[in-house]
Length: 284
Ligand SMILES: [Zn+2]
Image 1: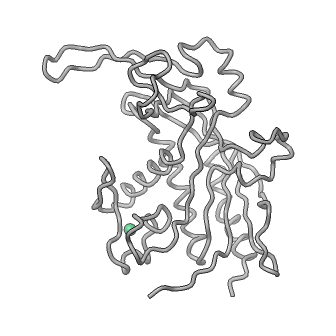
Image 2: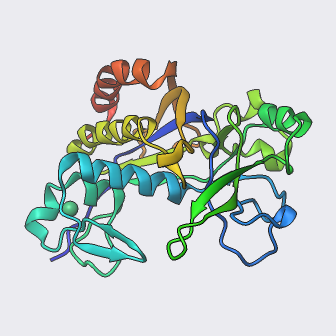
Image 3: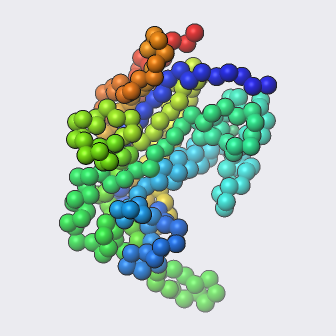
């Protein structure tokens, strides 16, 4: 049984991620870390600037939403345990599995609604960080006392962090083409999240994406969160959409709605923005 499903619209969420306390998202060895630091952060291999992988943000949003909703973690991905619906009945109404996706081998699955892009240093903050007096390019090294589990001795260890005050955002195409911010204003590639709408329910489910962002703000991204690292805040948020026109051609650029200062203001306006979008989508 396979149903034909039609892409009705796409939502685009443009937002900045402000680093409130030093952020450690670990790199995966391989290259020798800059400065030979013990616990290096992940950096763009070309520019060597810190990046915030979309997978880190999306994974954290998912796991917090699972915990908030009391979903049973029943599936292992690497070291993590996540919730995955194993039967079509549960899946059809499951926000987490539909929005965040399920492993590819589950045949009844519909397309994952949410894509989270990698985020890069905001160009303005990049210059500020470059001129700041930091331990390493774009990062600070924090010394912490780790306790040796066998000898109980305190062993100092280094943790590399992106310092408080850094700002990440999804990369607009201008970064590759040299176009100005104004010219790139309408570029979809600048959106941190892209959300596909197939069914009317998908618009209701989008509210849980924004709810998950609120859960992240009260938690942390990356490592050492219980020791204070990784607090982030979403700022300057706006929602855009692409809805096919009468001849069903896919729009080149999203239509952007108002920008909101923070997540609280954005959430307050979300219902009415989604209603406007719902009314514009030709469902039949
Ligand atoms: Zn599920």
